[in-house]
Length: 453
Image (tube, rainbow, N blue to C red; front, top):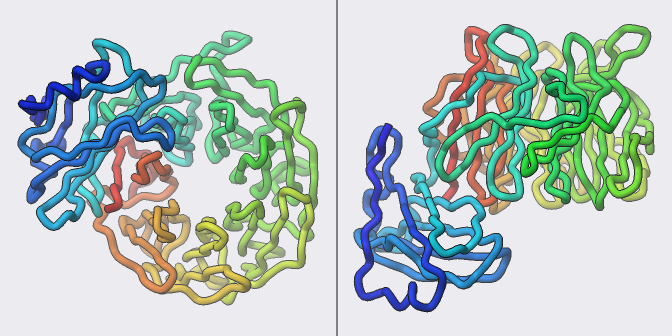
């Protein structure tokens, strides 16, 4: 659908063009229904940066956004646009993908209303759940695998351009000429090299294969082999990849995995076990904060656990376990600076939990949330966490909340209830929610974006 574009020539500002390379500028100020997202705004702020260096900063009336900018030569620039009302409050904002300043080039920015979810004007090419979504260095998002509409894992990869809101397949070249193996419930981590490492997952049983995908070159290799593992976590720290948690195969049976594996990305070709957890638990909440891996709650010996195991990834040390106030499985855990939030899950009787706990020096009670387990979580700027969806006592949930240290703010989520979805944070602090299973157990293909103020 063609959307209205607000791109008016700012008269009297040609000196901006004359002092740099001219780049065409288009700013989209309407949503998919052609409704304005800048209602009440009086001005826009435009900032072009390369890393931490500011190339251009200017403010213009909302009805006089320039159609071109003059910029100094730069290989990896980004434009951020903020619409402000008369009191200086942010009404809408957006950012471009990373671009090279070249004569005849163009910049596109789509604005999104703040403090709310907006549906993107595009959808996934393949509906999927239990997939991964990884934000790439250039601002795009890579979607990999998941459970497809046939009820079987899929292998397809797609890339979302967050500026044009277009999704296209990632056509990969592999050494064998075969497309990578289908998988769901795998882990993906962006390496400092810009490559994405995709490990494990399952097709009826946990997989031992791992892929290294270069989204820029469209090349994938299956050079890594690891312990068969699914429903686990993967993180990079100091040029090393770490895998832990989830399930593996022993004697043909899926069991909880106690091993923490490490791959030196600069030298090694195989993963090595660096630590073994004292006990194994399925359905534990996994996260990393301040170089420490956490495994919170879960199911152990048939019962729901309150134990929190830790691994210091830089020294490989396993300190004594901590204890949650409430035993829980299928909770959500996320690192927020040096703290960790553990939220929701299911209790010993299978009931959905609405309690949260913050780990500081020890666990302290946090604010109450809507009871549910399996919500996705993203740490927002300002020490808050966005929780979306999950499973409550009636099935998939459509609830979204901003959780702080002592308060919870509901955020309206207009999309269908879902679980098994993915949430990923963009480089401008916004969050993209993708896919998942609806109340009928069908994979979804919709994409939603939450833009904090």
